[in-house]
Image 1 (cartoon, rainbow, N blue to C red):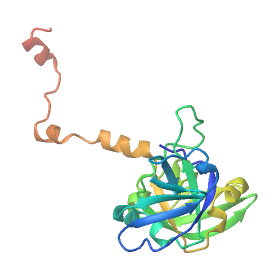
Image 2 (image 1 turned 180 degrees about the vertical axis):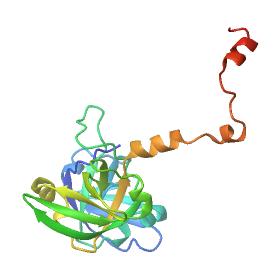
Image 3 (image 1 turned 90 degrees about the vertical axis):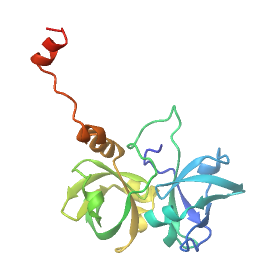
Length: 218
């Protein structure tokens, strides 16, 4: 589990992940300070497992499913990536619940200065828009952000100077592809609110006075 508070920006050391699957190598410092094989680290919001550590380099295996769902396959040597270690049990919960399981990708379609912030607007698929609410949370390339405005097929976030400096957001150009993860809580609530399959096949009997009398409770 992650919180969407980026710890550092790493650098991509290899490319060529577009053909099915492969390995990604990242140069980093902070996240390597206590990293061990098998640890989870979010790379642009994607939860990956550490498979190799060599000096300032850290490696991860990337599956075909991960490449289908995320923008990792588009990374080139030298590209910056957002990095966050998994939340420690005694850590501060500064952002929101982020699983590191990307739902889909979006596209940056506009950005505009507004006071000390920059308004970023992203086009997103219907599956992403379905779970968004104004002032709700969304993870963009692993960054916990608040939805500032919604339209039918796009949403906007306001990004303060600190976030622009500490993440890759400040380097995005129009047309950039980003990883999107919806609020985990919203997805669970929707799932739990749906009737279970056995209930649709054989609905449970409703509690009534007649039922209570029949079984000797009234």
